[in-house]
Image: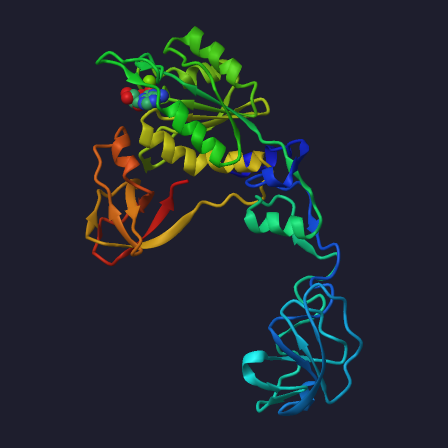
Length: 384
Ligand code: AMP
Ligand code: MG
């Protein structure tokens, strides 16, 4: 990943309307345009008082509500009836809740002591003017949109989405609109990969399927290398017609890795051709999804301007005993239930898309552990 990080140039910047900014990557720091809150405000409905006047009976001299400007300073021995969000008058240093006092006529009686500062959101307590609220490189979520709106941004300055070419290879593939003959399959990977690319913040471009011949594959690869990132599905294993790596080499690719000790996805390849990065993902749907999530997604996030790619890995406990064969780290379909328990979803292997459709995660079975009892915990990679 270091090789990706050091070679990545930040993408160009564009401005999008705030409503379209969700999931985009901020290209600038967002700072507080003023103190938050800009003046001390009440956190409760009640009475603004001098804390030293409680407990006791205090004269109420008026009321103040949210949207009103700050009242004159409050003298000792007096209270102002105050609503949540209203400016706390100068002098007052506490709010007592309406539920905790007796209010009769122009007098309010509190039997409890008040702490200085209680239920007062003092000026600048949330943020001081000029403080960085969201750093550049952050993927914008709903709270960030709220913060942008709060600070007066009608749009967001974001990095342009990287374009990602998706090239499926294989003589057995037909278009998803076609009826396959028994020896053929529909090209599902182009679409699941496009969904993963979009979920990770990229612009997916599905290229026509390339057949397993060198001339056709080479020209398809050349086309794919015009995009910011190229994802190839299939043709990277050791078979006679797995021509992706030889063709990439003919195009001057430097392959940075060609094999990893995982299953599915062992033959995944990663390389660069000039300034462009390319992943050769194994063609089985389980393999291409796992290797995308483990490797390609991080590269895509760096190309999007995001600072720290993070894999969504959590710990969960097995509902029932589980075992696998030692030797490879396996990413196996699993379902994390509402009870927080993990269920292994049995599958026929990495071609088994129906099993993956029943799963919401991949459990990560370490290469050096064979058995887990019910209740044992294990790491889980969540599916986007
Ligand atoms: P390969 O990596 O080319 O050896 O492909 C392995 C297996 O993955 C093939 O036998 C196909 O069954 C399957 N496969 C390859 N490409 C795709 C694709 N685009 N969509 C769905 N399945 C595929
Ligand atoms: Mg193939």
